Image (cartoon, rainbow, N blue to C red):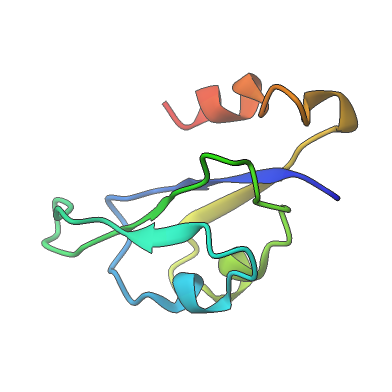
Amino acid sequence: MARGTVVIDTNRCKGCELCTTVCPQHVLAMADGYNTRGYRPAYLLDPDGKCTGCTLCAVICPDAVLTVYRLPAAAKASRAPAAIALAA
């Protein structure tokens, strides 16, 4: 199965929760805290590496705050440290 990861610009997220409803792997959740604009942003909760990089979350996001990375086959085991480093 394909693997991916999602980077979310939490300061731009307005917490509409649309991304969490379309994720077939259920790896997106809403944060308990608030961003700088006063919204509860979405975040990636994927400790088991279930994200497939399908991009459904990015397509439905009205503010384009999600960036999806499809991981190369060699990175499946390591969960792509290069893609995660881009989020920092």
